[in-house]
Length: 81
Image 1 (cartoon, rainbow, N blue to C red):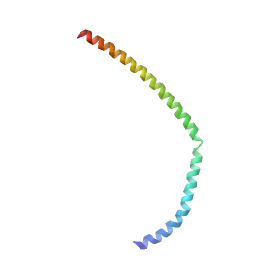
Image 2 (tube, rainbow, N blue to C red):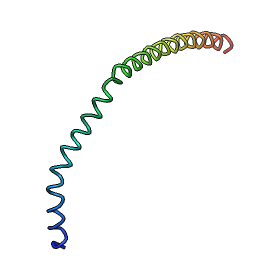
Image 3 (tube, rainbow, N blue to C red):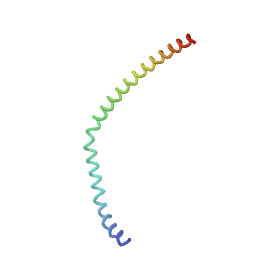
Image 4 (cartoon, rainbow, N blue to C red):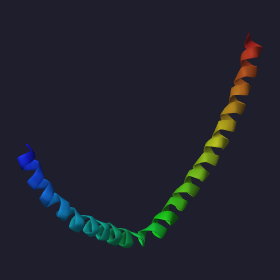
């Protein structure tokens, strides 16, 4: 087994000195290509956040209306009991 691993490590060791910096450069370039998209993405998430805030307030209003309706049914129920 060591006859296979030793020559393999002699190949992978020097190869990693080439692949690691190459991978670093590739990831850096990929991040710089994606950077212009971040402000656009941020504004889209901001719009989505405001839409969910509006939806939340509408559900809050609906919840209060159901609470009023519930109390009215409770009063009506107590009159029939």
